[in-house]
Length: 479
Image (tube, rainbow, N blue to C red):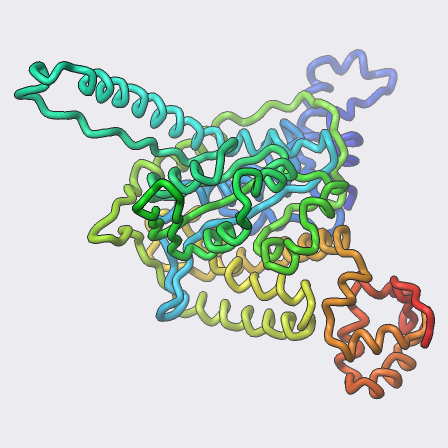
């Protein structure tokens, strides 16, 4: 299959240029547009599993791709994060006793400048921004009433009731200090989402306002762990019972290494992200296809209806989150998937890849919960279709994470994170070697044949030349 942008250039408005073209008129143009509308542009290898999305969201993703050149990967990821935003703490899934998951996501879309990263996110988040605008105007009006009453002389206040001080409920944050982030999350029980056009700027600004490490706070927010914020000058700590935060933004491949340095790999921050990283991210030319407004209107209606029908309140110190359970079939499917994922984690034990795969236990559950809500917001159970979709999405996002890791991972530093016997084994390998030679050498370092073969799959340290033949990425002198 051709790459996303190649398809656009070759197929969109591909009007025949024969001598009969002039006589085709509108009919020829219409045929050309119909042909263009029948083509869907996707990545060439690790394709975003659009079939995992319920019909409305799949149709919207395809339509935005055909009409506005929005890459499938970016729109699909934006939809998942937007739904995570509007769902918020209104619903959670019971995985097992004492293990509940909300659906917050940390997501990042990666592409070159001009690859259409920003527009899909803005389009998909537009109805949520509308809610923020309504809430902002309401807050402004109520604050003016409170201020006006507060300025009245004492005599005029007698016999009147002081208006309550208004609270600003805001879902989307784009430019903020850490203190403002904590305040907004405390005020919005449903939760908030950080939306950053340039994620590199967001990462750089994490510690601008404090000498402390802000990454630790974001790790806790991702886990939905209750958080206490202590600040000088405020005798009462800010206690966020159910922190719910999602993140979405864009990065260019060339800044990945700076955005995720070694310390962000070692503390688990990187491992919590879902990356959308198409194989091709070129800028596409404008076409003559128009957006199907009916499909987009249905999406807007879904977002607004869910928001209005899922009032999140606190009752006796606890949020009134609806709890979903698995159907029997879905639970069996998840357990089988998780067993296979355990094998993958163990295969990449003591490595960043293993840590990435380990976090996908949580990603799977959250994605399944989102897909179920997208299919039926009134669900009481996460069903088989949702977990099958989550499996496909996890495969896509995990492959993207490994791809990002290959871009940012310095092989020498990476080698230093492995167990000593693996480091010594690697250093003793010749620059070019066969599988059989590696297996024999592995025995000297207590690495059995199966583990050697697993180790050779590490694309950061090894390059497969052909079947049974490898080269090392790091060229070292043999001791």
